[in-house]
Image (cartoon, rainbow, N blue to C red):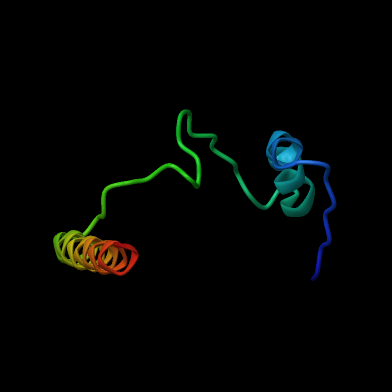
Length: 77
């Protein structure tokens, strides 16, 4: 099944999301609305190893950005 949805804004889509899910799922799905949580809300990783990997790669990313900024500053001056 393919569905195409056109809306004027993301807010309009978000406001009608629950109705859309109900219309597609019918009575086969029970929907539980969680307050204060959206798909864009950052969450802590469930696994310890995942947290460690994210911390490691975030540190590497920040180091690369800092080095790139330093190189750009040298070129500009």
